[in-house]
Length: 470
Image (cartoon, rainbow, N blue to C red):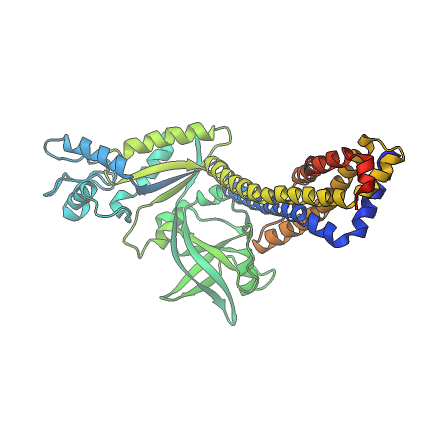
């Protein structure tokens, strides 16, 4: 009954000074709203990234050929300079030959040959002129190397994929058209990227070996070009690009999946048109591959496999002084991305939490003003028998009521910010109940903490002096 009476007194006090109450709550509202909004948007981003990476394959390992850092390059220079004749090992990709010709090329790319293929490659490895550069074809992985790697890890590898972007353009049929990216792939791409076939088949080894002009298109393209329910298998599709017209025979249709956050309209939607990777590279001077994606078997420890794969690649590229091949998996990338978004959300939330403290100071300030204004009221209550504990509880409850109302408004504001922010970024909103409960609890703690001193001051007033106060 006593608590209920204090709550009623607190609400009556707030009603009598509405503007002051609102201004007092403002810091609490902004702080709570900011924390919930920021954390909700951060959670939405994390969930979107997690979903996208899961679609890409949680058991996938990506191999990338990248430039060595200066430390690795210097270590390789030292090892190279220890060789008196400067001869190269001819079975490592990108191995430099001697300055005046180098060794003869072997089965692996980058074996030293004449000046373009080997000698100059070795020279560049020793005296690279820039911090970043595009690797030569001789520095990249050949298909034979990739297949040899697949054989060496046959117990761990389920499939591998390589790609080559050929062009972008429009698939046309009469007045209808669809935007497409022409992407060269191999048979393993279907498994690695979890492609679901709706009709026909995917690219085969025969297609790749023969550089056949066949294509796998999306169901969205079929609907726009051929019409709903049409059978496109065996039909030809013409792709108009800025430089040429490409004609492919459709052998399969896959089910299109929109990527997380995609906001493209059906009219402007661009889908992938898959062709054999060799057909995509037919007009290119680069025949080798800078990136390879591997899908591990279900029973494989992805971390251990990545480490073993990295050891294999280090040996393969040990003589290449400029470039290296690195293996990374989605698990480590996901951990890094989650850690980054969590750290950002935590840092921004910490800044937003400062407004809660400022709001708390505002609450204390207003409560002190309230104590001063109500000095005679306090004296009257004490003269009528109210204990100091009753007076103290009255002001603490009033402070908590202010923070509770501010917290509730802040929660509503934070949810609105989170939903709007997530939709603007193209993500689905993720509202954490724990964050809401935690924020509200924190606002109540602020009410108690910053309301205690004014309440104690009010409780300590002498009733006689309080009644004399003007």
